[in-house]
Amino acid sequence: RARRAMGRRAAAARVALAAACALCALPGTSAVAGDFSVDDAVGNVASPVFERFGFAEGGVIEMEAEVTPNDRIVYVALFRRSDWEAWYSTLSRSRNLLLQMCQFPSTMRYEATGKFSFRYEVRDQDQYTLQVLACRVGGRSDPMAPTQVTGYVTLKNPALGDGHAHMSLEMYGVDTLYFAMLGLHLAMLGYWAWATMIARTRRHRRQVHVLCFVLLIVRCVDLALSAAHFVSLGGTPEVDLPLFKAHQIASALATALFLLTMLLIALGWKITRASLTGRELQMLVGTFVVYTVVGVAVAFCETTAACGALQLAEYVLRSLLMLGIIIAMNFNITHVRATIHDSPWAPSLPAAYKRLNQFHSFRWTFLAYLLLPTLILIFQITILSWSFEWVSTLMGELLLLYVYTHVGFTFRPRPTMDLAQIAAQLGEGGAGDVRYAGVGGHSSGSEDSSGSGDEEGGVVAFTAADANGDGLRERGRGGAGGGGGG
Image 1 (cartoon, rainbow, N blue to C red):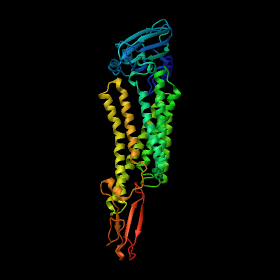
Image 2 (image 1 turned 30 degrees about the vertical axis):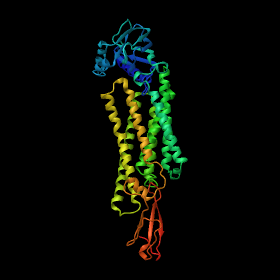
Image 3 (image 1 turned 120 degrees about the vertical axis):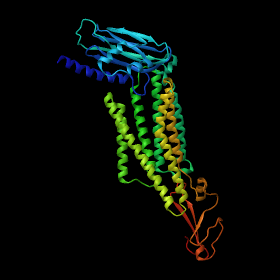
Image 4 (image 1 turned 180 degrees about the vertical axis):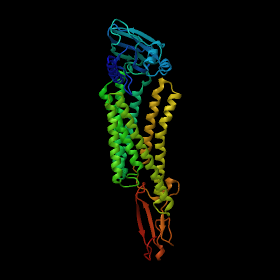
């Protein structure tokens, strides 16, 4: 019974340790400074204080901790990236195998008991992992009593300067990257505001353009919080949790709104159709709300199990949204293509061809959004060294910027154009008016031509209402005999 009770206390302690480690190594963070705790029931445990932190030459590790009971002996071991991957990857969670870690080679090994503190200066540039090892029971206390280590650790890279001293080497310069991305997105936001609110094209503004404007605002807020988060990481030893949570919430909202906008465009909302059906609207609103709630919940989860479950749910919902975008997009392309192929020549066909080109362009852009992250990951694993991981972040941000720019340019508000201009843009026509006569009638390329005086001489001239082909204006001109048009 005593062993089982000790086992239960050890399991609870490991949950607390996982939470402490999550606090010390939050996703997307670099600075590490905070409390940690290691508990064990039988004096045999290896627990990471931090993992894979990039140090430049001259990096500093400072640690203050206490071992309880104070006559127990533990070891603080520092492993290089190569040693950590070579040795730790061979271990399972078996306690007997974890004991072997006490025999593994390490860059630094510090024997500690009671209250202790040490400062270690890294000699070589590399990624390092710091472990606390309770390898054996020492002293006169009960051998079944738990060994506990609590303390505070600080990691610094003085060589990176005061503004980046607490940042991992591979993340150096990421704050500048996010500031640059913020500037580009603000320029895009300014152009979109001008095109939809000030320029002459504002007359062709639709609800989907307003949604894109809101998306750009949320994206700029996300980038601003990301830049502020990394500036805070570099300049202060501890993670600013409120700023980090605000950054995660803004990122979740931006992703949810981006996927919603892509899905509405794929459905042709305000592009090929005026409104959505009731069922479509219910599914869209429900999915968007659930995805947003799950994304925000990830920012506030505190245990590894809860965070893993929420991230899995977020991944599933995101995959379903992407599947919906692919299906809706292919349906619209098939529908527009069938309209072109099955209909006789009509003045609206050039606009239909233009719409088909837009959806084809949108499909290729979304395909790049789906596939390129995998290629970036392969590039990072096979080509980039650990010190250039920021390049993969740069490539991911440039990909997202390309998607925003290309989709916005493709579906931007368009000025009024006639059929000849649409045909010229498609490479299928030239300048001049386009007129169609009734059956047996005639068409004229001259604006001043008149009817022939008989019933079949009526001419009907068509002009596209706008570049998006939403409608046609008909100008009827009867001949001297006053006949009807075709």
